Structures are given as C-alpha cells and as structure tokens.
Length: 170
Image 1 (cartoon, rainbow, N blue to C red):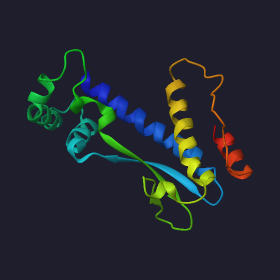
Image 2 (tube, rainbow, N blue to C red):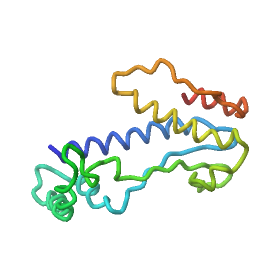
Image 3 (cartoon, rainbow, N blue to C red):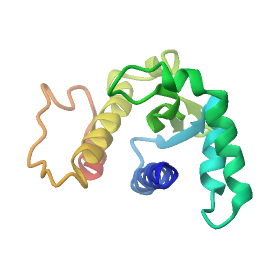
C-alpha cells in the first residue's frame, strides 16, 4: 500500500508539472518563455526508481525498495512521532527550477543571480508565475474554489503585454 501511495504521488507531481508546462508553452512574456523543471535529488533517485519499477506481481522488484528502506532504517525510526520521515516525504525527492528562455535554446535557470536580470517588470514575472502555480495546485483537487486572489499593487511596473499574458495564465 505504501508503494502505491508513493507511486500515485509521483504520478500526480509529474502530471502537475506537465499541466503547468502545457500552460506555459502557450505563452510568451515579452520575449521570454518559461518552463518548470523537476530534477531528482541524487539521494532519493534509487527509491524513486524502485517505486517506479515496483510490480506487486513480481517478487524481484521489491528488493530495491527493501534495500533502500534498510539503508535508511535509523533515519526512519528516529523521526519525530506523527511526522513523515524526511527520507519518505515525496516533496523532498526533487528540486524544482523555473527555466527562462529568450534567444538561447538551452535557457537559464532562474536563481538569485539571474533573477535580477532585466527590468523590474521582467524580474517580477517569475514571481507571479510561481504564485499563480502554487495557487492552482493548492486549490485544484481540494474541492476549494478560489474565487479571488489578492495582490498588493499587482503587476506594478509590468508592461501591458506581460500583464495580459500573466492574466491569461491565471
């Protein structure tokens, strides 16, 4: 059951990223496009791969899972009561990057250095994309309808074209 739980969450996570990337692929913000990327954390790669390959009808597939659990037994046992051991928390298994594309086909990952490239409006777009994406996932599927999302001085300094693309993305 636990493996099925993990497999389901991995599938949902990947589906969510595909959904966001499908929406982002339809939009250009000025001359810039964005793409959300997931990268497996090396520490969790064996576990992720074992969950993906698990087949309840094949006895050999559970060996990799058993080995991972055995290797991290102390960490799992010594975690706080009523908490998820960090090693088993699927939210820790990936790093997330927002990649920015302009004329460079490979794009650049937005980090502290690249975040300050461009005008104030250009710098604000990734922040709005992140907030809108989080709002989408927080409220989609939880039977909570988000009727409004409030921003203080929304889209200040963002040109009309980028603002319209952000509103369309929203």
